[in-house]
Amino acid sequence: MNPALRGIWEHMRDLGLGALAHANRHAAYAAMENPRWPELSVLQAAHAAELLIKACIAEEHPLLIFEHLPRSTQALGTHLDLEDLFRQGRTIQWSDLPERLWAATGFSIPNKGRFDSFGKLRNGIQHFAPPPGVDAGEETLRFVFDVIDPFINQRWGLFAVDYDEDYEPYVYFVHALVSREITFLVSLEAAEQFDHWDVNWSKVSPAYKNEMQARVKKALAR
Image 1: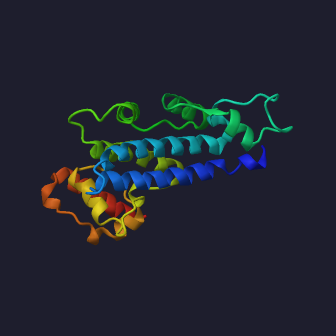
Image 2 (image 1 turned 60 degrees about the vertical axis):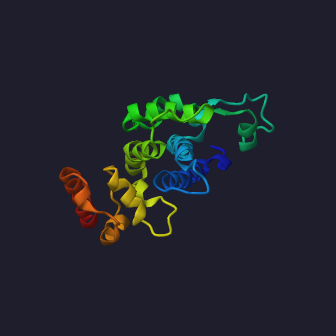
Image 3 (image 1 turned 180 degrees about the horizontal axis):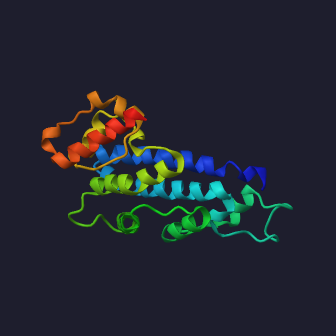
């Protein structure tokens, strides 16, 4: 493999995690100066998922993320290089990601139905307008924790709750999740901050409360 291609997957993963933190911030909070944060969070979460899935595929081999590769007659030198891919390569599309991921790695997209529907929501917001009656921020959070969270945990042992741009991690972001009764995987770092979570457990269902508190205990026992 060309050495210039070896580090592609790590760069893509880091960029995807940055987009995930941005999506979580915009989905869970409100900004008076920009009322479009919820819709922007949809675009950012979709971008994060695309980058993270492609990073997983590229970890096996970077050329597997491409739908179209330059021909030898189009290459600038004697070997396929990054510049050739920038000029002539075309990566696979959103709808093709699940099958390519499975073929390359054996992994399946968690909750594929939500993956598919979120792709349609992303397209609608990006090209037209948010559908009436849709809470874009909540849709983003449910996509993140139904799809991205289990995916990055299975592949790299990461937790989506750890990626948020708030200066007080886990305090207000967790509140946004708990108030919507969104289940999420609990990292050790999040569990250690449990006493600081800004959460009123009396306002959620007993089943949800028991599930999340059990996840905290499990994280602390690892």
